[in-house]
Length: 545
Image (cartoon, rainbow, N blue to C red):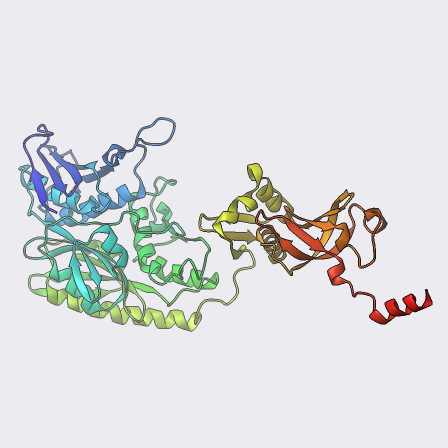
């Protein structure tokens, strides 16, 4: 794919506007800055709004109004991803209001729009006339079969052990965001520094996570001794929740091994340090306490940096003041075997290889210290699930049998759920998941499903019920929806003159299947299960005659 940057044709009233194209993905990024500083302004008001338009993917929005609504989690996270590497590149005393709007106008399933948006924002700032120590480049790095892959496609990313986004100037790394499958520090460092100058666009987070695991982070204003709005999560809360989720997702059991949906909620009641890394540690222990068989303990730690001239100090497990006054916020989470998530935010113009090596090394020591404390309190996941967790039973049936379980107009499955109290989910491949609070309810639902989908085979024995009387025999219900004909000649060994002499409607009768024809019609026998009269008795009766 070719990366193309165009300007001068669209949004010419903006201070800077760039259309970035990569494959079939196109993002229009605009920058507008106010010429005057607001009176009393003592901070830099930079706003980044990333928007995904449904028409870019050839779709019409859902809902009553058929318009795009509030920002999705993906849009919020990408807005933060654009903001973080750009913010440290403005002059220290620059307080003019700046707004960057990145709008996806065309979407390619194999190429995500987050990296083109970062590159476009940098380019738009560079031509806007606004003071900016850029430009920057951005890239994603994958790791497959012990090799780094720059800008992997969405398909490649599914096989990758690493999903790392890096943004940098030509001399220093500014931001790193990563998710990994317990990779060592050396691999993470190689990925970060090996692509510091790469400006190509790449695939990203689209469809990356399964909805079966959610981690929701909430931090009310009282946690930092402040007042403020309480309610819907803010950008910071969504970003912190995603970072903690990235850290834990590598150790979760597969869907085949653990079919439950999991939701971890981290309620921050007090914050004077890294609450996102505390959420990783607490989330790990909560999953273990709930009986989720996670593969390993995960801990996180926040590192800081104070830099004055050539003097540098790397801080471990930073407090709120150290975060506020320091020059770097570097968060690392992982297991004993390696890193599962990494995020770096820099307030100065860059970081050297040596500083990063020291930070990673110190973070590993800190992580191992926390892991030891966590293991002391909880050695592993509980063997038993919580008494309040629903029990899930999985049954596999032939896909052709699904309609039999559902029934006409859903009658069969409705009766099953009402009579057993279980919740039943059926997938297209024939996998049936039965969820119930009481294990006995689930077993009853399973038994009835297996009955409904069972195949009638010659030689099988059933305890049936006579449902219809005929002159030449009776119809016997063998399984739900499956009947067999018990012919008059198969009722008893002796001659049967009238079926009613031996059977009545509603009577239970033990029968054996003796034939299933090409059309699926079943014939059964009762006499096949009855011992015939002894041969001697027959011969004696003849002699007496």
